[in-house]
Length: 296
Image 1 (cartoon, rainbow, N blue to C red):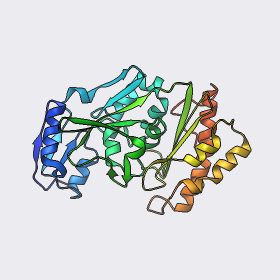
Image 2: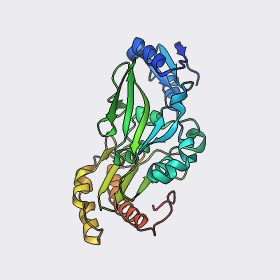
Image 3: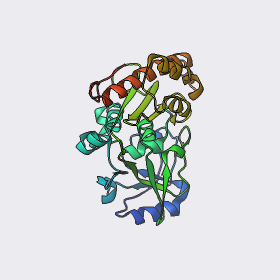
Image 4: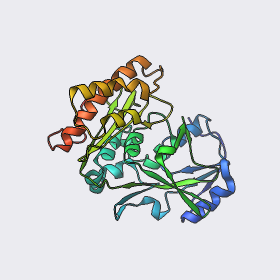
């Protein structure tokens, strides 16, 4: 299907130039990086911008680097580049594991992590990993810049905290202070490219802190604070796992759609929580499955 609309295409070479173009056009402009969602929306007539701002030529946005204890991922960094990064695999294996589940190899070679959070579909695979790592989005408007915690980023399906005229220049994650381990579990209808029916990210550390986040079972990906509070400071037991599973229905709001019924999503979220918690704990102890090995 062709794109049947006209727009101005801008290719800024600096962040400030991009910021000024977007500020001038405000809600009538769209940012183009990977374009894996945007181009489909253009073809389907879901968006009709008067300007596209191609940011791939801005050098800073192609950088993936560690600055002190902070990992910085530029807005033009693809999922394929994240998967190729030994830095990400060593310091943030949960994000690496989640990135492997995004779409297909071909899509991952174009799709960006920042584009994933800006599309803000409820099932986005990067959401749980970024939330449990308490990531932040770097945002710019004109020459002004601010940070937005991912915890307050997602406002609804395809709705974010991004204001008119702003764009995301990157994502930042801090390296955890303690030895840690995690797991990302994705339930799909079949092997291969599919959106999640349920997604779960778990992160734990040597101090027995637990962070848990779901996607695809509510209007936005979100942490599970009641489950986290129950688990805090405790070693896993069968009784504790059952209590945690009993809280799942209070933490998520699944719906019935073409991919699954809400009842199936709720049941599988409980199953996945137990497996995710056990996997994270076993990886922390040095005896769990390697990252990237499915436990579903």
